[in-house]
Amino acid sequence: MTDLFSKFDPIIEQRRALLETGVTDPFSLVMEEVKSPTVAVCNGRETILLGTYNYMGMTFDDDVIAAGKQAFDEFGAGTTGSRVLNGTFRDHRAVEEALKEFYGMEHAMVFSTGYQANLGIISTMAGKGDYIILDIDSHASIWDGCAMGNAEVVPFKHNDVEALEKRLKRLPADAGKLVVLEGVYSMLGDIAPLKEMIAVSKAAGAMVLVDEAHSMGFIGEHGRGVAEAQGVLDQVDFVIGTFSKSVGTVGGFCVSNHPKFEVLRLVCRPYVFTAALPPSVMASSVTSIRKLMHGSNKRAHLWENSRRLHGGLRALGFQLGTEEPQSAIIAVIMPDLEKGAMMWEALLENGLYVNLARPPATPAGMTLLRCSLCAEHSAEQVEDILARFERAGKAVGII
Image 1: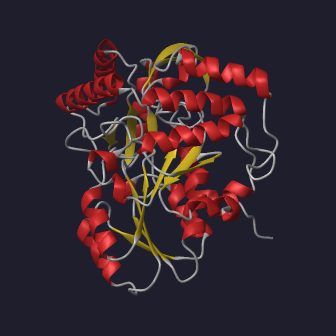
Image 2: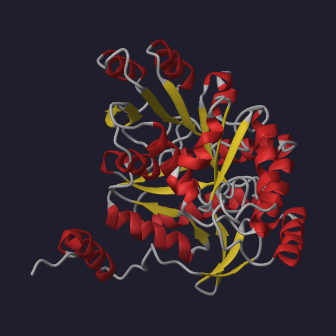
Image 3: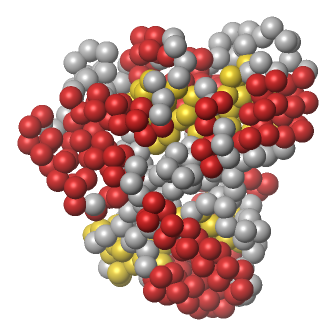
């Protein structure tokens, strides 16, 4: 009889070999206590958090927590229903209104996760006979949205405008086309040339979806993302985002100006056939989103942190994923998985948590230590982080 687990044997063996070197399992870290957006207790040691995507530090905001507690008392622990049945509460609508105001768009749908937002919108919008044209480095949720639908999938080289244009020109002129891009790509922290990509997409008659998960709240004058920063937000048909990054809660969303958008509430399976988020999460989310509308000081400080950490790591001799800081993500490239795991553990022992990212999630087979900065990191903490990287890097032999 065929063992259905046999296809995972290479991953099982890779993990076994890694753990046999004596390193801590980097994919099963437990936070025993979280003290703030930037500090937690891990393995009994107070640890600076540099791998949580908590970009704007909203998880411990007093107003955000108070709103969630009040909704918990008023509406209970959960919804026990889909949004199209009994699962729409007061604060679900309030979040959608806040998102419409935040982005200046006519329509907004809230999903239970950011993953489901991509899964639902992409699989629903592009069907049989249509084409999805996407960056080869797209997030797993985008690829899974393609797999769930029936459209033809056409990938192109990462951030290559000419490659996108060539793919589009080969497609039937009268076919439905959806170009899927990301504002910030989460592995290397690099941004997309959205202005040029949207221009060639529109010239080919394609609709455009931009995932701004890693830029919402931070990039752009009002924190609306890379599309806003590049002056093309009004040309984007769908913006996808998540609450688990800058908003500091959990959930996902899509905003749009398309006049027929509301029909998606009836035909989008990952929206129709899943339970709605708890009202406490929604109350926290709407409070956070409205505060992010006025977060310019936080955004400025986060940019300062990003520039200082990027420049400091380069000066120490680390190889980084981008030449200049482009976002709140800074990727430190490791020689291989074993060295990457050793460096990850050395940093943890030095009281610093980052993400160890490995293939196939990473581009070009790279092993990365991925750092995500927070607006609540103080300038002193950033200097402390650099000192810990230096100690760990020298101990492991990376620098």
